[in-house]
Structures are given as C-alpha cells and as structure tokens.
Amino acid sequence: MRVLVTGATGFLGSHVARALAAKGATVRVLHRAASSTEPIDDMPVERVFGDILEPSSLASACRDVEVVVHCAAQMGRRRGLEARLVSHVTGTRNMLAASVAAGVRRFVYTSSVAALGIPGHRPSASDAGVRPMDESTVWRGDPRGWPYGYAKHIAERLVRRAAKEGLAGVILNPALVIGPGDRHVVSNVLIWHMLHGRTPPLVPGGLNVVDIADVTDGYVAALSRGRSGQRYILCGENRTHADLVRTTARLLGRRPPTLRLPLGPLRAAGILASIAMRALGLPFSPEMLRMAGLYFYYTGDKARAELGLGPPRPYEPAAAAAAEWYRARRDRMTR
Image (cartoon, rainbow, N blue to C red):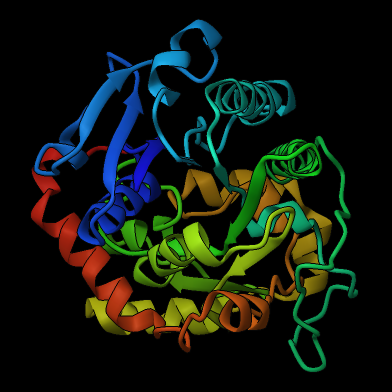
C-alpha cells in the first residue's frame, strides 16, 4: 500500500509514518523545504516538498498513492481563530481536493478530541458523576475562546462532506498524546515544565492522556477498518489534573505539590490568575484557567470495537519515555 503522510516532520506525524513503514507500507512524506527533517531522517520514506496552503504543490505529492494520512497543521498555543482556520480548514480543503483529483482511495484526517468542544457538565471540584464524551458529542463552545477546537470541528465537516461525495474519509480524534518526540512541547508540556523545576499547583479539572503507541495503532487500523464518514476517538486514561501532576512529580523524582487552588476564586480571577502564574513560570494559560473544574473525559469504546484496538496503555511509561527523550536532548531544546 502506498501512503502519503502530511506533517511527518511533527510529533504525531513522524510516529504515524514510522508505524506505517514498520507495517510494510510504502510511505511518502510531504513537508516544506524549510522544515527540519530530523524526526524522519532514519526512516525508509520518499520525501516530497510542498505546503498544504499551496495547492499547486500538492498534485505530485498525491500522485499514485492509495491513502492520504493528513496530520499537517500549524500548532502552538498563541494562534488566533483566523490563523487556526487557515491552517486546519483551508489546509484540509486543499488536501481533500488534491486527493480527489489524484484518485486517492482513502483519506484519514487527524482531528482531535478538542473538536468535540467543552463538556456539558457544570464546573466541579470533583469528577464524580462525570460522563465521558463519545463520537456522538456535538461541538459546544466559543470559537474565539477555543480556536483550535473550533477549527478542527469545521475541518471535520469538510471530511464528512467529501465522504458523502465518494471519498472514503475517516476522522481520528486523539486525546492528549504522551510520548517521546514532541519537539515543540505542545502535548507533553507538563512533563517539560516539571523537568525544569516548574511544578504547578493542584487545579480542579481533568483530561484524557493517551500513549503515542495507542494512537499509531489506531492509525494503522483505520487504513483498513475505519468506516467512511465516521470519527474515532483515540484515547487513554481519564485522569484528574491533580493526579497527573502528582504522578508526574513522582516519575521525575520531584516533590509533589501541596498548594491546591479552589475552584471558585480560580475561575473568578481568570486572566489575572493566568498572568500571575505565567510570571512565576508555571505551565498555565488563560484557556486552562477558564476551563478549571471541567473534566475532558472520553471513551474509546467505538475505536476498540470497530478498529480492533486493545485496552489503553497507562500514562506512566509514556510519560517516562517522554521525560527521558527530553533529558537526552537537553542541550538542543529551548522553550
């Protein structure tokens, strides 16, 4: 099987390309000429230059491939709505058009659990009674308050439309991906900060963390088993923020935090609390504080049933592997 992977110089895309090559696929990767190719330098892949925002560069990349796995998009925490829409929506539209024109059989889109939006429950100091979200969850949230999630939500619409028009389009929604290789320190940000001695206080709320190996298993399975027009949540363990901070501290040999911030004052302080924490070098953003007391929990039952995935791997080994990778690159990384 010939597969094109976009975004293969990034964290997730490089792992996906490596997993597909290991399974015997003939892998072609699309990347910009200026991109660092370090994550793929040791891979047996064909490389082509192009940019998802430059449609004229995509025809040759899609030629003679059966499947396109679209992982490319600009990441980072400080991009506004318009920039997110260009990267995630316009880029996906361009890749879909190039895929259809080239006769690609299947299109696997990298979305995110963020595309499901904000949980419907009221902010709470406890996760008792919280019901995990699933693939039927409809976007809920303020586009400008969470531009990344909204952009993914809109891009998913394009993939579903293409699926109705004949392209086998499958949507994958990874949770917070943990593991080695996150050069830009996006999803492994807690591990990075705590390695550098910046331990956050305990904040109400929770999220789902997933081992990168579970995510790549989902991609490999989606190539043959994913149903067109369907989305699949690739998730791991639902954990409270406090549990993750304490667990990460233990893994890194750090003293666990004792400062616990109460829900009411934390949400009321909002941006002021965020500014204070950033001044102290703590890993908090205004978005995180606005979502204090919310539990972004998910179920992977559909992916396990339809893609044949096993039970989720635990957080600890993936976090330890990420930490070891950062330690080995300490002199080559700044943030």
